Amino acid sequence: MGSQTIIAPVKPAPSVPYIQVRSLNNGTHIAFLITWADSTKNDRTVKIDEFRDGSAVLLGPVGEMAVLAMGTATIPVNVLHWKADWQADIDTGFQGVESAFPNFWVDMYPNVVGEPPYTLPDNFSDAAKLYLPGWKVGNSVSQPLKVTSVEENRARGFGSLATEQSQGAIGRGIWENGQWSVVIARQLHPSDNEDIQLISGEKYSTAFAIWDGASGDVGARKSITALLTLYVQ
Image (cartoon, rainbow, N blue to C red; front, side, top):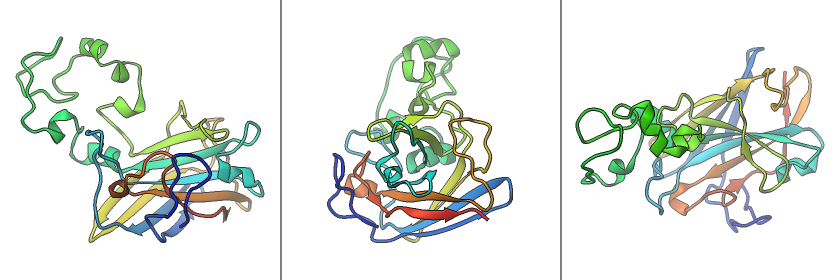
């Protein structure tokens, strides 16, 4: 792994020295197994000084160095981003304020049902979403019920990364004995026209990124690989 010094916030030295990546496909889906050493498990982002562990796969056309710069206006790239806090939301339930502050208490929320302590989404009616705008408008970060720990993104250059309207990637991460093992998978030929089609016998550009929450990694502050070539068999 290498440093990220192209765009702020920079990371002069990588937190993760190396990763291992394996990939396979079954003719309809492709999967990546990414493993790396990490002495701490960081899977909560409730407090302002908490940062998640994460990994991502970048996919773009082969032979284009601009892919490593998150693409350009004419060379878009896809990013499959696995997030440890999303994994925790799926495995143990949505992590709200009470997960970081167990003595947190509230007397009443508008349109809440049941008795306190309240939890999302169990005690909140549809009308309560009016007071939780992120949930109401479908912001992927604000959704209390997540069906995948991988977010599909599309970019056309630095600062343009955006969540795709259609989300089809799946994944799972397990932290055990000081190591993360993360699987990220997607269709080879998704119907979404925002996704790059992966055709058997063709080559594509790819790169990998790792975020180490204990080191304060977030956004562009990450450890990255060089631009690599993916051959789809």
